[in-house]
Image (cartoon, rainbow, N blue to C red; front, side):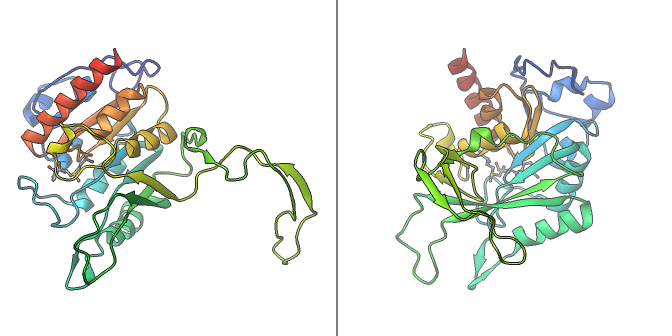
Length: 296
Ligand SMILES: C[S@@+](CC[C@H](N)C(=O)[O-])C[C@H]1O[C@@H](n2cnc3c(N)ncnc32)[C@H](O)[C@@H]1O
């Protein structure tokens, strides 16, 4: 059983709860299980305050990027968000944040870099890695005075000593020379000499690097297209497969149209979601219902 009273193994049993979180409901003893597999319409910091300590395996999220989109009006506090995430994560839990900076007057806002330093120095995370998300399909027309930005960052923040779950197997990529037999020098030692020459067959797949490629408009889902700033479903899918055990709990504090939620259910994990916008919560619930029908 996890902290929400659910079976860790099955990861199933979606409650299509459309309950709107209120502090008073929780003060009056609402079971923590009400948060599980549900999308709550609330500010994420207020929402996370209701969750128990050490109850979440993985956070996958993407906050608003400075002022690039207005959505339907919001305010958010990345420092307070990081503090709550750190508290609710289990030891060894990971947080993956898809983020990019706004550019104004030929200068970047630096929000992503500031957040990385703040979460590590002031909150206590380690930066496990900073993955580059290479976006395929960015528009080419209006980039007149700067480079066409075709990447975002995915800093991976680790709480504690080492990841509690880390399964790189599903993320492997094809080896260019897979199946061929190659002879070459071994690894270079610190003194510059190399270990002895080896002959071996190249594996068909290899460990993924730190640049991850995704097609931006790959999810041809009409519901998803109603949200102005989404990430491809494949991003949360890969992160969940890698960092959340089967039946574990994935939190997305900025749920948008539910990409993290649907990926969690496709992989038999539980999710918890918040969004400050009522319309987006409704959109995410509809996408989730659609996904659950597909999975039947
Ligand atoms: C970049 S979008 C997330 C999109 C999501 N990754 C997807 O694929 O649909 C950011 C979301 O954060 C929400 N948001 C903004 N401020 C918030 C807050 N304080 N608490 C919760 N959600 C917030 C916005 O309404 C928006 O839907």
